[in-house]
Each structure stands twice: as C-alpha cells, then as structure tokens.
Image (cartoon, rainbow, N blue to C red; front, side):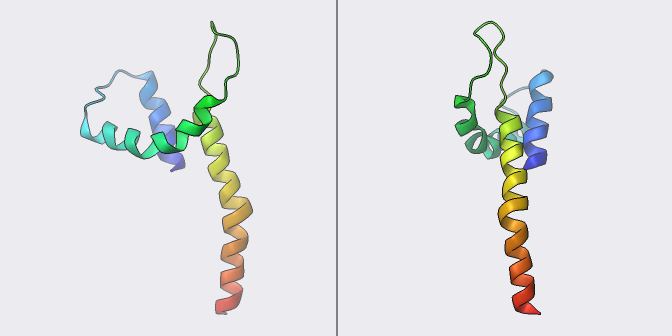
Length: 80
C-alpha cells in the first residue's frame, strides 16, 4: 500500500490518462485510504498542498509498527 500511494503521488506530477486500466486500478485501491486524510487542510487557499498521501503513508507505518509488529511477535511466541 505504501508503494501504491507513492506511485500515485508520482503519477500526479506527470501527464497520464485517468482512463488507463493500470492507473485506474491504482486510483481505485488508494482512494479509500486517502479520502479521510483529504479533510486535513494545511495552508491557505492560494497555497493549498495535498498532504493526504503523507498522512496515509504515516498511518500505514504506524499501524505496521504499533499494532502489527507486536501482534506478529505474540503469534510467533504462541506457535513456538
């Protein structure tokens, strides 16, 4: 998911066709993750920057390190 969000950011800097199947798949997968973070607005109207991808990747990293890593460690201890 992290890489898909990063790829989507890169796609926003280059011209592309949103009807392309590959690009449509990336947008369809990442949009539900980015949508809640789009409500966070930093800056004024003239210099609006979309920080949704940054916050989405940050949330993914936090979930992986705070929730999933201890859960995997617990499961590993129970199996061994």
